[in-house]
Image (cartoon, rainbow, N blue to C red; front, side, top):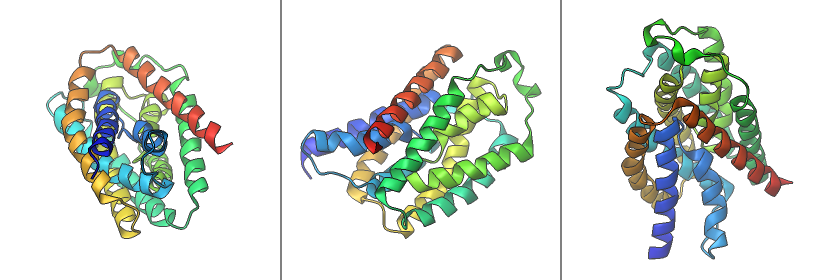
Length: 258
């Protein structure tokens, strides 16, 4: 394998996984467009949308578990939220990933772009002051959480994203979960979602394993670093970082589709 290609793929994985640990997403909101656009810009091999979604799916699996491990002692992992949303999103992601092989590349990109727009809009909706609430007093609507997680799972399974970039705005805006609890718990739900997504992508032969292996190495290193930095930043700053990232990705994706 060409060393330049190795370094570029590693850096894409590192940046995406650092963001994963920082703001509680699987990192595919960054890695999906970077894998799709950066290699061809540098004259390297071009990945298809199906290959990108496959690489993203298996990489998110490792990035999210590394991030959850880093957050395990902070007291921000809300177990009942993780169980309810995790079980629903696992079913949805398995359905979406198994069905994605029958979709055209343009359709996969359209699904990704639509999810990114929805997430961007939700991030800019004013949020209640949930960060002032003690962690042990946090409650949520369980049927609503499961229904939304199932829908997110189907869409994210199609694009190999695990849905973290949609879970965060849903938890913040709809379920009113505090920011730091949202970041930690959404990573755990994203990990569960990535199981279904990864199984589906492997079963349908959508993973380019050499590139995926490089991304996995980067994930294990970068996600815990992002989690460590996250604990030192203001929650409003974390929300703004994610909102800007999602908005920029949505604009870029739809610019290319249209």
